[in-house]
Image (tube, rainbow, N blue to C red):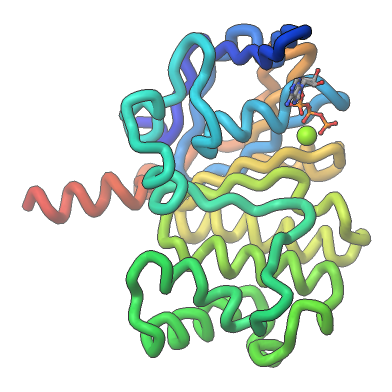
Amino acid sequence: MSVFELRNVKYVYQTQYQRVEAIRGISCSFDAGMLYAIMGTSGSGKTTLLSLMAGMDVPTEGQVLCDEVATSDMKLDRYRREKVAVIYQDFRLLPMLTVAENVMYPMELRGKRPAEARARAAELLEKVGLSEMADRFPAMLSGGERQRVAIARALGMETHVLLADEPTGNLDTENTEKVFEILSRLAHEDGYCVVIVTHDSSLGKRADQTLNLRDGELIPGRRKVQPKKEAVSFTRLIRKVVKN
Ligand SMILES: Nc1ncnc2c1ncn2[C@@H]1O[C@H](COP(=O)(O)OP(=O)(O)OP(=O)(O)O)[C@@H](O)[C@H]1O
Ligand SMILES: [Mg+2]
């Protein structure tokens, strides 16, 4: 069973004067425990596709399903708050908050008590190798460190889906390597479904599966590994626990 399923997804940007068919009928699925790389030239529809999966909008035609529910049948603000964590190329950290506070912020928005959020933020910062930086402000960090804070913040959402648009686009080779390493560990060890958009073909080659976009159409790449059987989506796990 897939975490995401795209069924003949089409997306049209329609303005008063222009109509752009950005996605032209894509069907594919994404599993837990896998790292996917969406690749393609500029304007091929990568960000549009990721935005549809992130619930920024619903498809013009077709369906995006997450844990078997179509985004068109969901309250999108709640979906964005609770189910999908997004990591951006420009990090989007809040400059007036410390590193720890940036990681705590979405947890507190979701009702976690400050003391719990602080403890969880410390765990997550350790996971991305930034325990020492907890009390710094984002301006005092390197690009690679900022991106790792953004990953820790995304993990605080406790979803099992991570979507990242060019997460290494602003980083040098060494930091790209660190960030990629963290993302692949999250997929392979923690069972996350990780989907990244990248221009970097060397990262594409190392992903479990590449999805090549050309003019809004999908050319599926090879699939290197099969998802582990035990890698199940977090939501499904919770549902199972609640049922029993
Ligand atoms: N807000 C918008 N209004 C109209 N057309 C848009 C809008 N956003 C994107 N497009 C068009 O949709 C197509 C796909 O854009 P998209 O941003 O998904 O490409 P991309 O693959 O992410 O490109 P890049 O690698 O440059 O980020 C392009 O032709 C683009 O011009
Ligand atoms: Mg883009």
